[in-house]
Image 1: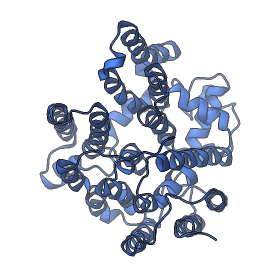
Image 2 (image 1 turned 90 degrees about the vertical axis):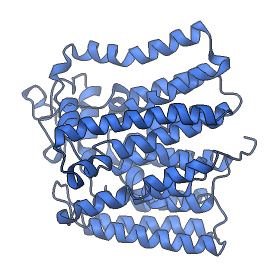
Image 3 (image 1 turned 90 degrees about the horizontal axis):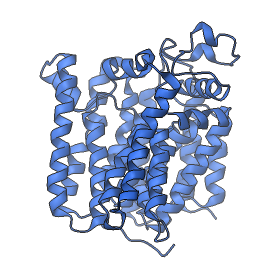
Image 4 (image 1 turned 180 degrees about the vertical axis):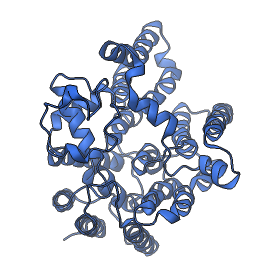
Length: 418
């Protein structure tokens, strides 16, 4: 018989698949964001009631029900997404021996490569912003359904690892729609990049420093954010030797050197420059500066960077002195770093929240989990553009509460013997 968690997983998959059919669109003008938000809020309320009645017992759905829910999601399409067309296109281009860092989707050099759905790629004049391993992942996956299946396996493995750490069934159930929508229904690469970091920090006693270093290096080659975990690895006493530092330095240098070999002239990369200079989506601190204080966008970007640097220094000094336990410090620091990074960044896509959600689940952080759940408000713009300021506010509502929660709680986790 299915348990409550099994039923929640199945029901969520049904609703998300139905929404993907009702509001099906290749973009860029999506609609129906308010309906998705309404579902997530109602679902979260039901989970809260079930938790209060002590009816949530299992950390995640059992295997049969997990894969049944995934099959239901496979019957739909990515909800409010057309990014998968770019992912699959750039992966195919890269695997075929061409260079998506030099040639955008509309370039003459790539016109001969057949691809179904090329007309739905957004921002066709921009080159790739994804590191080589991400492109290889997209290219080897080749088809949307296969990549959905691979991401489903990653989510399944995430659940398995979280059970080892005895995460709260309440927190995990809250995250079901988020994980289904962003990483099984869609195929965003952040899950793979985070999982590699997650393995390095939640590893068993058999995980050596060099294995952790390799995992972080792989994450870095999937998405740049993965390198953030490297300094914490270097702080561990057992890793303080010249050979380890030398390998770490090579990993840091490997990506820019590899990209230079592939590209030669970084100025030709129109994607990263456009993303860094112009793109704004559902920001936190940035929107306070621009909408509330009337700061111009260029100045707001600079102040957002300054704000994050000050926040970062606070983490280094405050948590460095407070946390005597090295493991606690690493988990606390990464969690708070990613919280702040998402709040201060001018671009906050909902799938970015996985970087702090996994750590919030690990540390039983209710407000951190809710911060990720409320990323659904990023989609209010789809069908309700006039309500974008409300979406921005709600998407970051739990950031200060997540910090407050950390101000008096230590990062305590319980773990079974793996």
